[in-house]
Amino acid sequence: MPDGTEFRYLGIGVSDAALREFVLRFMSSEGMSWDASNWDDRQLELAFLQRFGEAIKVLRERTAGRTILVFQPVMSGA
View 1 (tube, rainbow, N blue to C red):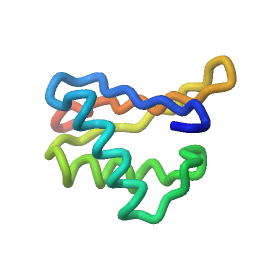
View 2: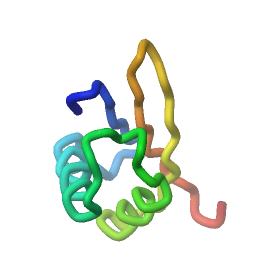
View 3: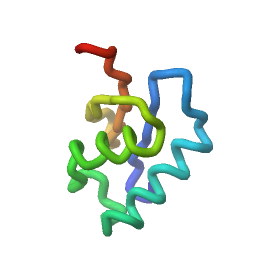
């Protein structure tokens, strides 16, 4: 992202290319800005579930002035 935000998926079912496409489509469909710090994590989690059929939890990490949104799969029943 232009602001240095990165996205990481910790599972094995979604490729980097598919994740990039998902993020861009999410921004477009939800009318989000490039500033991911204002995004609603719950909306992002629901959109991911709809797109890939996998429940995730969005974790935000900040390091060296950058934000990393980590998409962590949630175990069934958790």
